[in-house]
View 1: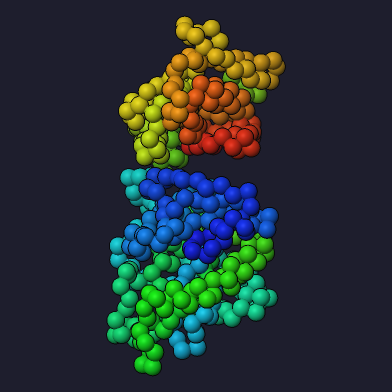
View 2 (view 1 turned 180 degrees about the vertical axis):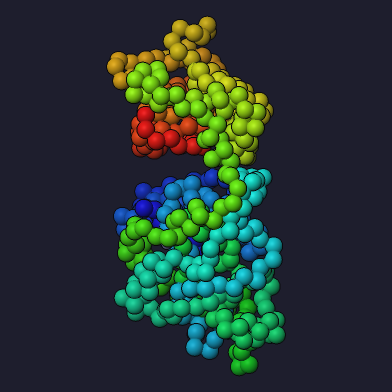
Length: 445
Ligand SMILES: [Zn+2]
């Protein structure tokens, strides 16, 4: 279980966030709004993202919601709690009150609403995600309970209208929204909530009312100064509520996590890639299910799809050297290096490289094996991507990683088409903090 936190909550404060790391990431949809601050809050693993950038320089229309949610998904967040300031459309929701949203009305006009049907990742899939209840019921219960315990005034229901912005509403618009029985108004909840549901992440929002928008006869219409002042006065309460909620979340089964699976029309690129990999039982010895990528390479569309995914993932990462692991890593690595316009370096089995090499040993089921790299192949600090067709126990890639590091390379990521998670390779990379990416998974050995 890992909790994503979106908003300007102040929880990234190093006094609260322990074992913290700051990570700059990119996604197939571009860069998220800020670096990801990861660490632990009271022992719970969290990833914090500033929706409008660390200095509030990204206006609502330009928030890359797809990159934000995708980045948290890639960090393996299971839940997201978002915080937002909002205007009140109802007299009884006073400035400083919290609202645990349960519905939204989308009045935005310029935002991407889906990850799918996009050249970036799934061109042939349409996702009709159900959204009758757009917020996670379990997460909402946690927030309601925690607010009660902390004596924080929080309305248990609320419909938010999300407008495009950046301007605030006219009085006529504000009165109309009020007449629709919406409770609060902001510029951020849609499509953030929709994308979280598509990503299979439980998502809920703590909205803090800061003003009466512009419908109220007896109050000054909303200004940015007013929002900031009320938000700052109540920032401590937001922090307390989020901190206590994070502790109370249980990693239970939830319909949010699987809704997207039933909503897709068309075949996903990854399913298509997976279907093109042939399985040969009992090769090279009895009991082994050999996952053979030659059938994938032999299919021009399949090979293209693999390359497109690699290209989308790495073209903005300033990779300088692709390091391929013998032997199928040469085929993929060579093609990726060519597509990215960077250099290629092979890592070979012992005795194959003619120049001066350094070696790394790794363990096999019985005994050990050795791989080598030319010791002058990579310049100090060059950004490297390690590629192989498949990750099993992770021995070779760990050896490759250490070789690249030893000769001065900076490994940005290691990438594989096939993951056999039951063999523990990716778990091993995770425990060693070696960044990795895998495209498709197969069960078994
Ligand atoms: Zn849920």
